[in-house]
Length: 265
Image (tube, rainbow, N blue to C red; front, top):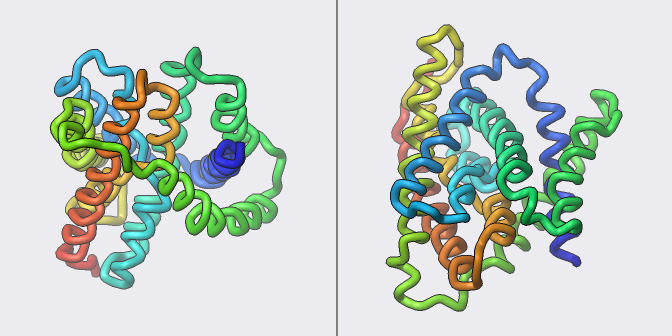
C-alpha cells in the first residue's frame, strides 16, 4: 500500500510535467521525435532477441531523475540546452509510456495499480492549475520524487534473489542490449531525421547521442510495467537485473560521451 502511494505521487508528477513541458510544441518537435525513436528501437531489438516475451515494454521508458542526476555531475561541461533537450525527451517518453501501458497492459492492471499509474497521471494532466500553481507544484514534488520516491522504488526492487543463470537469460540480455544500444541508436537517428525534415535544435548531434546513451537509464516506470507484465517471479527478477545492468552501463556511457563532447560556443 505504501509503495502504491509513492507510485501514485510519482505518476501524478509525471502528469504535471507532461502538462507543463509540452506547451511549446514547435521547439519540442526534435526531442519528441527522438523520444519516439528511443522507444521503437529498444522494443524491436528486445523482441528480436527475445520473441514472444510479455515484458518487452520494459525496454522503452526513460528515467528522468536518474538521467538528470548523471547530467548534473557534468556541471558546466554541458550546455543548458542539453538538459532542456533531455527533459523534453523524457517528458514525451513518459507520455508515450503511459499510452503503451494503457493499450498493451490495461487488461493486466489491477484497479489499485490503474489508479496509482494511469489515474494519477491523468489527474496531473487535467487538474485545473494556473501556470504559477503548476510550477509551484512541480517545484515542490520534484525533490520528493528524485530524492525519496525513486530511490525507495529502486531499493525495494533490487534483485537480491538471483542466480548465475539470470545473467545469461534471454530476458536479461535482450533488455541490456535493447536499452544500452537501442536507446542511443533510436534517439540519435530519429533526431537526425527530424532535423532533416525541418526541425531545429540548439545542440549538436553528438550531444544528442550522449542524451540517447543517458536515456538507457530506465528504472521507475519500467519496474512498474515489470510488476504488471512479468509472468512469474523468475522473469521479474531477470527484468530487474537487466534494468540495473543497463542503467549502470548507460549512465557510464552517457557521462563519458558528454564529457568528451565539446561545449558549443
